[in-house]
Image (cartoon, rainbow, N blue to C red; front, side):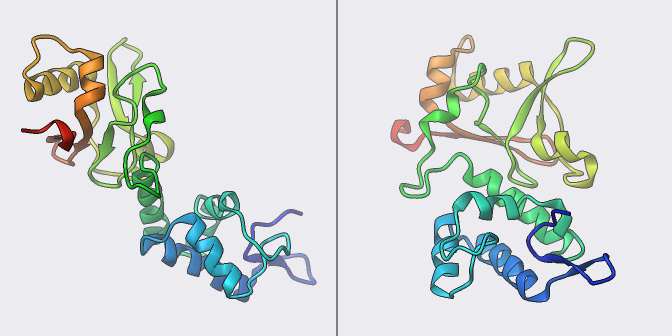
Length: 206
């Protein structure tokens, strides 16, 4: 039986918490929520002499990332709030280069220029493009899409046309232009009340 790092099998075959490893899991969550990068956490664990789940001296960023996403820890090793906040923090960082703290150019690789631009003001995750059965296209918080109201209760769905109109108003555009949006918009934060906070790239601000 394969168990997540932090758990173990007891002699009677039941699953129990490995308290020493669970302590490491909680340390990883605390370090992540304090702002430490995945590489920073890996280096920290190495300096502390804590072996990876496979017994290696050096942890990988992928392993740490997986631990931060494992729902099995909820309620047993980390609290629901800690797990929830970790997902929000991961969402915020997904669009930023940890070395330069600037947005990644690859964020525009999807079919819609809005992908990667829209951020939930409640949990920090990106918004995803959803086509409803009626054919209407809306944008919805990724946590809401993946986990329902359990993870992000106050994240409104925004019709794509409303989003486009708001951006056109912000940039004084007569019509939505993807190239202009790509160059000038940094982030759009969707607040719980539906307010759209559109941040224009500072280099182009006057």
